[in-house]
Length: 370
Image (tube, rainbow, N blue to C red; front, side, top):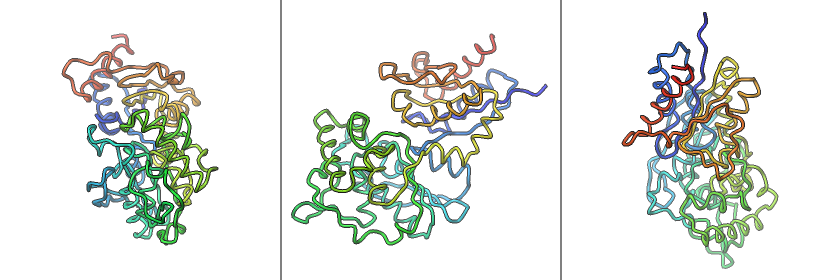
């Protein structure tokens, strides 16, 4: 008898486990349950943290380290990747401009900038790549991509012709954008902006109002950033602001699309193709996925929901493991056959990895009726 095949494809548990660590913890938990099951492990990403690792897992290639400017201006060690096809480069904005780069007490959504992401992009462009994938997600920033574009040669000027200071709040004083010094290869590459959400730039589901609070913005700062981004798109391109994904990574999706000539696309789809997820889901009898917090943002294009839609379309059941399910934020749980909430059953003193592994073992034993 051929044993069943289970696909283990979690996303990162933000701040505690990478997607690869989460996948291995779940696999360990299932092995401890002594299941007669073939396990297929595929750590998931959707444009946010882990995207570079996932694309390297699917396509191979090399990491290239670079010291760049972090979200609050201090140097950070980051990397970009060149894939084995010889023509594709990958930049993960979280490497340079991610929320994890800033201690909670230092977070300032008004001043945080994406300059380091632009430095990684510049290095990739200088390498001669023909296609550049920029993964968006997990950002500390709400600057509309101003910092990244400045690193690529754009200048953001006030009414007196002076450059604006770093951060999104200064966009309220934007008078014009000087693109004359932009990187010469920017128009020669295929720029793919891999987003992890479908949110627009502005409004209640936009960069400032939906995501600003998690980056340290209080109610006053949120509305200040909303107004600044509105000024930005009024001067540059109002139409692009409504595209799905324009609000990703604090509006970096908007900036790279409106001024960088990039194409907004689903980060999950890019990663799914690289990992061959269509085929792997088709072969699976059950799919197990997960992430740290499942809420309304997860339903806006993030990996676990996209994977669940694919699996359910093929008649395959999906089990979600989540650190916490924020039910008061209207998450869409209808795609999942079962939902396992980890924090509700965590052993006191257990690490995140132990909690996930133990919860997976308990679920497997209950699943088998043991």
